[in-house]
Amino acid sequence: MITALVPGSFDPPTKGHLDVVERCTTLFDQVVVGVILNPSKSPMFTSDERVAMLEECCVQWDNVRVATFQGLLVDFAHHVGARTVVKGLRAVTDFDYEIQMSQMNRHLAGDVVSLFVATKPEFGYLSSSLVKEVARLGGDVEALVPPNVASALKERLA
Image (cartoon, rainbow, N blue to C red; front, side, top):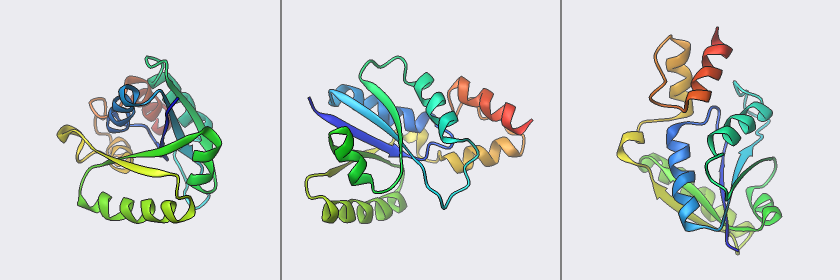
């Protein structure tokens, strides 16, 4: 069985994130969506809330599971049996950052490989940070996130 890890903070999950996950479901036997617990960030949603949102978003795919982790990505990849880390790329700036991360991960664990997936053009500008900013300012984010996430944002910002 070939397992892929799709890591991220997912604060909140966007349609861009789910596009990457969906494409992985046809390429890999098992897909683990790894919610990173980063102590240097102050997320809008708790890790449990992000996991719950993602589980609801991913219920349509039998080969996807959601889990949280902290520490080194390569250690978590080994823990879940993934040798492939899949990252979505929106622009060259994403690539610049992700290639450095990929090379460091390769240095730490030579058996973990990164696979970069270009986002669909309609998601090229989309980020969790922008979604939160638009939502905070009263903008409509329903076209950018799944319905359960839009509801959670409205509730959190009410």
